[in-house]
Length: 58
Image (cartoon, rainbow, N blue to C red):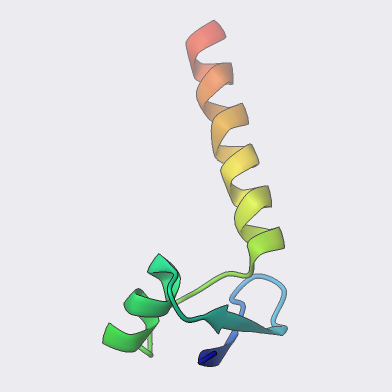
């Protein structure tokens, strides 16, 4: 199985991007982009949802 090693822009640790994922195809097209590991990606999504609900609830 093929994979790329990328550096997370949040925690600055290297992580594997496995073949067959959307992130793998994005990385193949743009290796200079900013990518986050699964843990940081989950934290970012949760913070975005929290901010959205706070705006909706006033």
